[in-house]
Length: 282
Image 1 (spheres, rainbow, N blue to C red):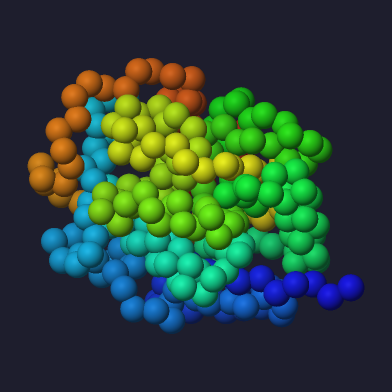
Image 2 (image 1 turned 60 degrees about the vertical axis):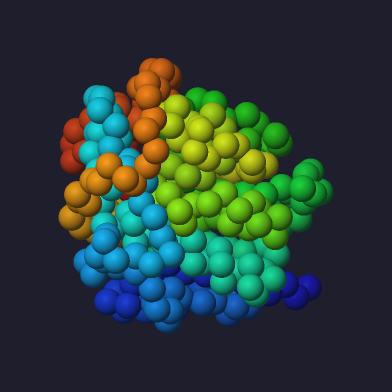
């Protein structure tokens, strides 16, 4: 039985030919693959000027508090990563991809990935023909996953966007949320679109709209950061400007997710959660 072709979009920087070469070696031949390194746009944090981003707006991400990921400005690498994913969604919609597979260039694919992915996709479509988002790999930050059937859950708050699928309706929904006008880290956006984000301002900015699922255990994993590094984290902070967002009053209530985020990232280089270093989460 032949495996249907899959439209895949790989987030990759022009200067990271090493990562592209690794992905080209492991990607299934049956997939139609595009790399963001073949496109033009402000995707590299080392080259981004936050004051010169035509067509994009930045959200003033920093929020006073104890959470180290929220109490600091955006990083230029986070902006580039967010724009890269948005450009993948745009290209996938133009290609009429259904579904669209989004990968980052440090994703690790298992043997027989294409065939296994099609089996998961067929089962999900039988369970919920109207699904929008399927995480193929992620880092769950709470205990809120709800089992649908063996190997498939409705996800709680999750980080990491190294491998996920969007259906055609899912693509329309993420492109319709106005992300390009108020950029935040993309692995904060996706959870906000399917659950109540623990930050009140993000809940208001990006209301829920996605029917989301996740494979559990993951089909796709990620290279360790001590092996692959992080182009997102290895970048400078943006100097905040007060006009980047409307005034948002009131800090978000402390939730279990917020506490878990603090635990995961409290000492970014040394804290480990379930055997995985917190520095691997972004």
